[in-house]
Amino acid sequence: MQSVDDKIIVEEQQGTALVLAQTPVGAAKKMYLESYGCQMNFSDSEIVAAILLKEGYQTTADVEKADLIMLNTCSIREKAEQTVRNRLVHFNGLKRKKPSLLIGVLGCMAERLKDKFLQEEKIVDFVVGPDAYRDLPVVIQKAGSGQKAVNVLLSREETYAEISPIRLGGNGVSAFISIMRGCDNMCSFCVVPFTRGRERSRDLNSILHEARYLLQEGYKEITLLGQNVDSYKWKNTENEAVVSFAQLLEAVSLVSPSLRIRFSTSHPKDMTDEVLAVMAKYDNICKYIHLPVQSGNDEVLENMNRGYTADWYKNRIDAIRRILPTCAISSDIIAGFCGETEEQHQDTLDMMDYVGYDFAYMFKYSERPNTLAQRKYQDDVPEEVKSRRLQEIVDKQMLSGLASNQKAVGKVFEVLIEGESKKSNLQWQGRTTHNKMVIFDKTSGEKGSYVQVKIKECTSATLFGEIV
Ligand code: SAH
Ligand code: SF4
Ligand code: F3S
Image 1 (spheres, helix red, strand yellow):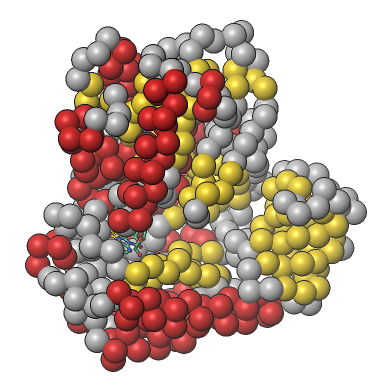
Image 2 (cartoon, rainbow, N blue to C red):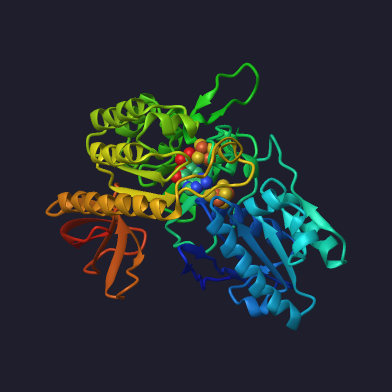
């Protein structure tokens, strides 16, 4: 019955992707789902869609047509939450026109604020945290009959292992697979351990099953997701040996040599040489590591509770360079953490020089309620100092990204075609193993195929080339 109209819409709004539509025909009620935050949240939205599709809902990209609006939210920085609040105000405008409309908040903000949404703000009908999505049908039904509808229970076991996600808003070429949930690290600035609960790993067999299924469905690239993939550990029965991330990575890469494998995020304190050796052994594991440093200064790292020093981090970088000489490296960097001095900020800039990152996500520190840092330290770096330091970091990264791309000019890379370029239907866009975006004329190839592309020129963000 469920034929799929493959109209897929993804919009970019204020740096956060706004979802979707894959519309099975013939179902009754329409749901509109918008996602914010990290890849794990987008991956969770695909689980939510799968759960509600079974209940007879169909997805829509047209919010005006929706009977049910859900926002899968992020709490990582103040700004992320503000964006969601603005959207909720907007959706409440729609509710005035259509009183039967139900509005729900999912994800990290739901977990952080719980029933405050229903009590103080009264702008939503139901609230469901990241570990309670199986309960959505019940919660929605309650909300529909005017009852208080909240489930924000965190779980030590839930991994949604056997739920086959409905791929939303994707390109049909790359997909995510969540391999674990939660985080046990307690970095002092971070809200994730509170919103996502304890770390738990997903059954190896269900991960492999999903990878094989995706391959069958024509996918060519999968990204294994977790807040700290290096601490993946799973065992079937008490007397079986524990499967490590290195072993999982190897097993997934063996599913098919034509399936590219990526993963995110690696943690500097846990990333082993064993993982690097597996990456070196298999061509289909992309030579790209996201290894967030956050700061280049030991005292700041200690206050952040990151569990490593600048020297340790450099040692991990050296190991990558030794074992995977061509590997691209990216980072997350926070400017203006509590108590950060000019010298300490300079250490971060020096670290950037040491590594020469190919890419980085850069943020101003944003204090989050109830985190270790909020309870223990003063958010004492003035806003304008944070902004200036962030700008210095961004400026340096621009140069570093450009230098990295310039090194690619003249070389030939295997590129997986993800689809038509956004700017021209005469060009393809795709990525190299190093996760660099390449644009080139459609002289051959098709979506989902691998082509050899010679790089002719570049900007700091994109490579331009031609198929050879
Ligand atoms: N698990 C990943 C990161 C998850 S959050 C890891 O450990 O690296 C993504 C990034 O957001 C973090 O790496 C950090 O750079 C940034 N971030 C998290 N909390 C923040 C805060 N309170 N203020 C500013 N940036 C923050
Ligand atoms: Fe947050 Fe640290 Fe866990 Fe990453 S490792 S999610 S930064 S607590
Ligand atoms: Fe945001 Fe939650 Fe991800 S806080 S970054 S959506 S884990």
